Amino acid sequence: MSRRNQATKRFIHPDPIYQSKLISMLTVRILKHGKKGLAQKIIYKTLDMIEEKTSNNPLEVLEQAVRNATPLVEVKARRVGGSTYQVPMEVRAYRGTNLALRWLTKFSKDRSGKNISTKLANEIVDASKDIGNTIRKREETHRMAEANKAFAHYRY
Image 1 (cartoon, one colour):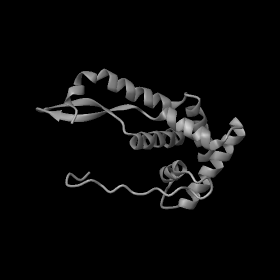
Image 2 (spheres, one colour):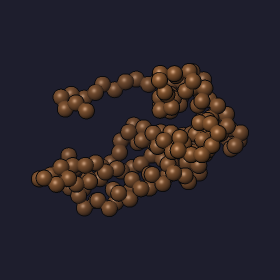
Image 3 (cartoon, one colour):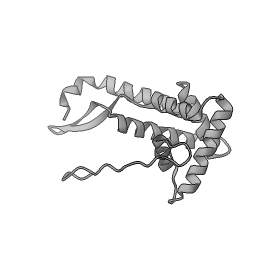
Image 4 (tube, one colour):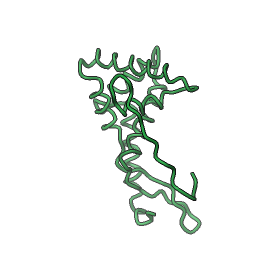
């Protein structure tokens, strides 16, 4: 990360079918070797599976899953006088969404299952119901922040 200046914020284009920026962000997380078309196929197949399982709008289920998985606080390492403290910081909305999507994809890859579409669909449905590894990761992040709130006065 550069100390000189801020990175410019890139504009996110909505995906072609659902016109959703959230799906575009998820596509980037699934992307491997620049094969965006394949990543989009995986996500659309995942959304079809979610619709079959829940008989709800898959976009609403995905939004609910991301909302449930988004952390409110996280800890950041801050060096003060030779020792490093884990300082709790509030998470901005954009970073929270990115963390939630990152955790959803990471834990879906770790799941057992036939293909990535099935694993991702199961993880999203679990997260929308407030269970699963993604939710556990969010709770763990919150616990870390709670445990270190004595160092909150070291905020930048």
